[in-house]
Length: 447
Image (cartoon, rainbow, N blue to C red):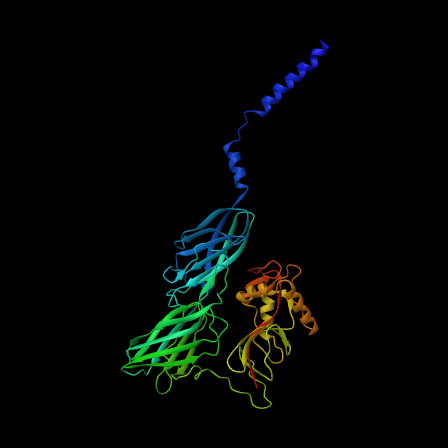
């Protein structure tokens, strides 16, 4: 009997174990709970700079951390909320206002670095606004995205045109051909074509909206069609076009100049009024700065002109500055982006206040990097390039560019910051310190 006890007990154990392991089904609530732990709820709210009107529908694109498209949708009006459940992770959110299929072409399989392409004649009827944000989705999240203009507004008026003229048209160049989902202008450029209409003896056009090429000066080519001939006139504006900026180009065919009123758009920067006479030749009416007299300092305010005995090269030390980029600007001149020799670690508001009074060798009106420049700098300063740059800066007794940790530099008028290590550009915090490195664009000419 004692020998039978162990087998019997073992049999009872197997029966109990079998009962314990069979027949268990989880409740629906438990299944739902398990699913919810891998997803988070994302809610989007949008606003605009200076609370200007946002044109609906709103086009929303969501990309994962590899740049692949996860979601593409539209928000029909301001009363319609955007909500979506997503797996936890890192995402790039991009939203556009004024993105019309009549004016823009979308790539078939967009990535976060892909470009929207503006259609011929290289201008749009609605002002394109855009905003981007990089999101770490770990819990239910509400994102407030600020949209800002990525286009320039152009308006034209021409007086004194001969009465027998049948058509007045013009081209503006260079303009960018595209804008990426992650907020960069396409480097490829083209010319924007505009046709004018005659109203009370004044030929007018606009406003039309273009993607600015922020690197080169703006050039106008105006064609007046008359019986048996076309007359072409040109004008070069001394600066590149800027996003969010209205421009009023006003010209006179005959004596004097004419300014047809003010061109103001609510919520945009103050308008720039440009007056000129018609003339022939590629650069015959380019705005030229006054040459300084002997012994005088050259004009240094704004994005003015410096006169020097030699022109700097890109990625070099020149005078007391690091020259990041250069581009030819006519005979014996270059446009250059200068980076100051020093930097500070402070709150964004303090850094922007510092810029208002910052001066080096009489050079004033410094700024922070634009968001586009920040992204270009991230790509430029990779690998050995950052090490060689810092060696160059050290030899010139300038502050090095920090990149070994998650140091962040101010950009986008102090509203964002970027990190060279993580390759990110995000909105700033009000209680966080950032590095301020002053930047300035100048035209440098040989004496």
